[in-house]
Length: 323
Image (cartoon, rainbow, N blue to C red; front, side, top):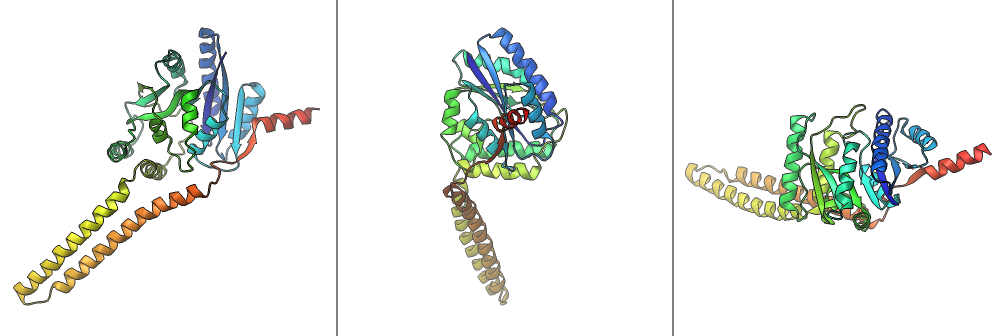
């Protein structure tokens, strides 16, 4: 038998979680009829939700023995959720997907067919439209991919999703990358392997609201740039050279003004050049500070997540209460 683990990071998903469970069960039951050698486990990750998400996990665990979960002690972020799921899943194949149904479970049979042939190690979806997103957010998303692919040696496909069906070999390669500052889109690309991209139209959430704000996505994009590129450090050198050139131009301009008008204009230009140089130095220090801060977090070797409760804890406690 082949075990397929479905890893689902969740944060405040009480409104959509029942719909997701019904849909994933319908799809996986259909797959089992077609492939009688597959079994499934469903590993949900509660990323410090403040609603009834954990309570729903309890109910699902009571209904379905294939349901497992890990509940974090606090919110650690989606990257930690995916890492926890990949670390604790048991499958020969692993699926990572969101609970909001923007990653349609209906793709799973086709993904499995691509993988089980041995031609691919990973099947993933790639959005060909951003229906439902604001134009500003879509523009910044496309800009991020363009910048990232120009300044990094790791190519990240525009529109590629975290929704992935992977072999155990690829999952193990991802888990070998144990850095604290994780950017999974880059990690998925960096490890390589043979990937099948499946185009699909963007799907809007049927219920609930996304936890990703514009500011959150902006910070996440900075994480990606600094995790897979040292180009910003080279930019700081360019800015330093540029500041010297501008300062020299302003200094010469001040002298010319003084000679042409018999008035001292050099003080104004020298002050402007000093101000410019100071601003550029502060900007460069900020870039260095970001990389230094990430190095600081890495060397402390803190855990990527802390589990507060698991399905095993819940079942053990409930078994003790029923005795």
